[in-house]
Image 1: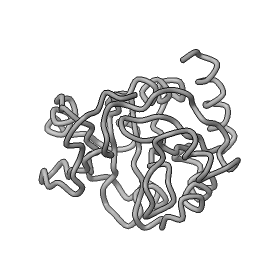
Image 2 (image 1 turned 90 degrees about the vertical axis):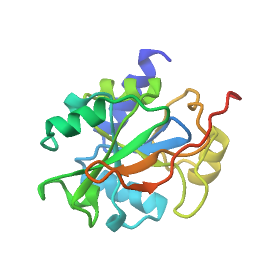
Image 3 (image 1 turned 135 degrees about the vertical axis):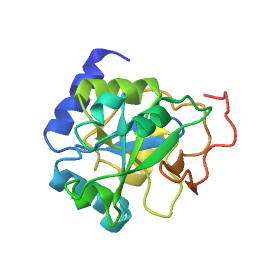
Image 4 (image 1 turned 60 degrees about the horizontal axis):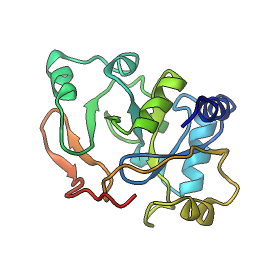
Length: 192
């Protein structure tokens, strides 16, 4: 993908827009996590309660440091390589906005390995909201056609590119207890 698409994505994000982009398994919806109006608009599009909280993606650990204090044990855990994407629930201070963490005292963060999502975080120079592109309780979009059917012209930009090889969304795991909150991908597919 060329730099123009990243520039358009960043422009939309700076203007409070909502973008769709490919991730490891499904299309994600994203916005500036520090723009409460953009987050509320995203939640309204998805018909999702703010209480549930949202996932943030980052391209590297350095992006997370502005949000939470990372202990050596947490850093070591984040640096491990896994066969599939994991979203970590990490304890966070009360200063993390409620519109991101919901009713939780943890922040949901994934160090994305998807090349487009990773490059998008780098172009944006920070964390992005990453929630599956769907109406709550409905299957997430796995094609641009599904994106258009679900959201029509309500999205400000759709980043082109292929989804990753996974057929299920990321596992969610508590970084402190290692408890699995949501099971992750059990397999990968090569049909893209």
